[in-house]
Length: 281
Length: 104
Image (cartoon, rainbow over all chains, first blue to last red; front, side, top):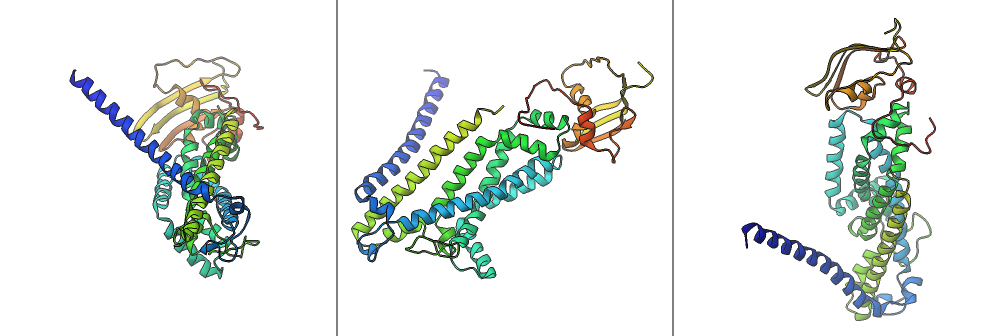
């Protein structure tokens, strides 16, 4: 066997092994959650709030955390998008030839992307103290919005950069203003917006540290922005810490619910992304 | 060539970064005539076309000197409304795009 063939086979085996490890870890994690969570799964888990003594193994469910997580992740993603889309458009469409400012902003968002979420939690907590907001749904949404903005901006930025430059030139050359050109680009990046929503929602719904101080925790479903809200990751954390086996099992059932929510969002996003790619150039 | 050209390029130079793309170009393009600009790849044909409706404005580190007069109006005059110029001088690029749902 020649040296080139040995090299080729070595790297092929290396790549197959790496793929098996990654895919295997995915199936191992999901499999474990299903294996440990399914026996404790019940209708009560998703339709009831924790009853008295839930954390010592008595009846109830995690509806409070499901609703809280959906409110926080959904709210943060919506607010994040409202802020991030204009930022991404500004960087790409309005800064034009001023590449150094655009690149500076990109570096800033990359740094924000890498900051641990507890820092956002602490910063959100400071904002709440400043404005006199108590740990609440609103506080959680504000902190998580700060967390997802860099993800959204950088994802949308990369998506906008994939739009052919000729398309911008074509719209500008017909006398379009920058805003009109942005509308043309926005139509093109709609599939990418759904990918950004998916990434942002996934990060938002799974984050613990940013909501630890800001959202609080409550056994009730929040009915206003000023009430504390439970989240699924925190519910899992509290349940796993219990010495009662039943409660620990419910933690895995809660993890299963969280996984299924993310799975549903992923499927929905990819369906919508495909739907909107039909008109893409 | 007629006495009143539709587009009159006078001593146009375009520099992008340190590279000089167009150097002292002067050309008169009469109204209602088909003009071909022929040259090897990378010689500046597209840059010249883009300079006719200020599409170069968006290019990083671009420096344009000289004049481009469209119906006697210098389109590089700072007071000129760029979208007005572009509406007047549309450009069809090699790769065509249909701008659906756009009303200009």
